[in-house]
Image (cartoon, rainbow, N blue to C red):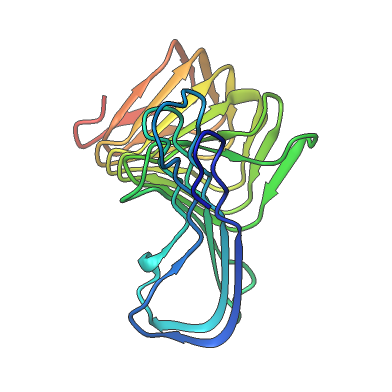
Length: 232
């Protein structure tokens, strides 16, 4: 909930299991706002977690499912939470982190005290106010399905602590920032004004084919490199 002078409440959790999801309403688990002035340490509450399992989503606008962070006023805004959508006829779902229409707090992946987070689903990180990173240094993030960073969202990774099973896609102004060294065993898909910045060296065991966007790094070791569609 909203708070004055203390950290505001987080968005909590919503789990919904239905055959068909339909209508023109919304589902929300947004963080609380810091509602008064004069307290320099107040923080907006973090967005919560929403999980929706359905056989049919076609009658509902899933962009109306939101877990936005709360407003701090002038301090630290809450990070957006997560929305998980799963077609119950499919073996995996889609994890969405999207602060579009919300505030620019940070969203951590993982939990304290763990050393590895395995994500078996498609991950979509999008929106100009969306900033995501590992919960703590040394936490290995393993993406077993496609990762998409788009619409000016930012993902910050530690190169030695990330594993991609399939090529990540950075597009439409999405930004990936990696602290190297980084070894990549799958193709890097960079298109349509996507930006990848690596502080250190990238060693790719497969050819690097850039279909647009910008790759900035200190050193690149790869079997071959091709730049298409104005890639830099």
